[in-house]
Length: 90
Image 1: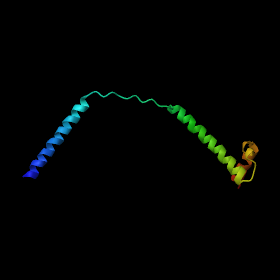
Image 2 (image 1 turned 90 degrees about the horizontal axis):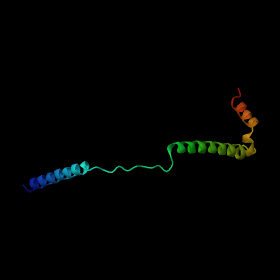
Image 3 (image 1 turned 120 degrees about the horizontal axis):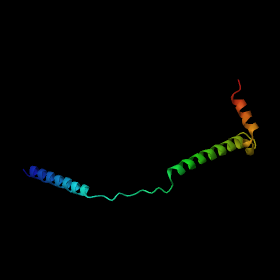
Image 4 (image 1 turned 180 degrees about the vertical axis):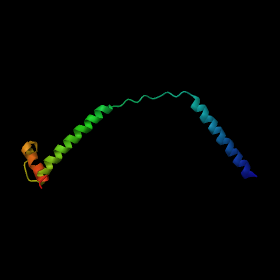
């Protein structure tokens, strides 16, 4: 019998908790306005710039260090036409 009475008391406390939550939900909550430090459009631009910079750095390291060429040559059109000709060679 003591177990049943304990379960009934637990059920009552659960109901009380639910009622308290309902009362809390009825209170108007002040909505917090989120202010972003960096706007989304600026984030997109930053990511695009970082992608371009990493591609340039990767090409410089790949051509200058691994390819044993001059890293400044990656900015010449003749270098890229040579690389494209090597890739598309039949």
